[in-house]
Length: 165
Image (cartoon, rainbow, N blue to C red; front, side, top):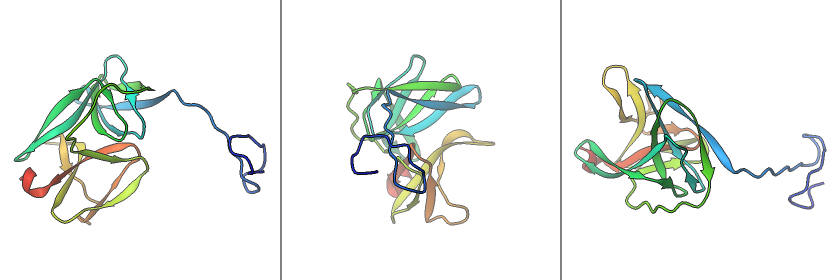
């Protein structure tokens, strides 16, 4: 029965609630192969340290259509970052971050979520365009330009439209 939290009861899924807690020490992330380099974004609700061969960046400045990246040695909770390394799987260890990130323009969500764009703001996701290459591109939901879907634990760029153009 579900009267105590943190115990395991081998009941049925459709019957009483069952809980099982497994301690997590790390999370796996995959860097997609884009022109021979591995890239991904992430947004996590806990601090993580980076694996060897992995570099994390956040956007600390937006200036007329360009972004400036700042490198961080680890990632504090609730900060969007761009990850770069060789394409493939990496482990992010759940551990207290020693870095402090301020002025980060990357936001994110911990669940897949439909984001409604606020008036005056622009929203971009990291993607590879067939002709223009890797970059931040306008986030849209099909033909609806007023919203977009952000995947769980992924970051997106949010900026006041006047600062990006």
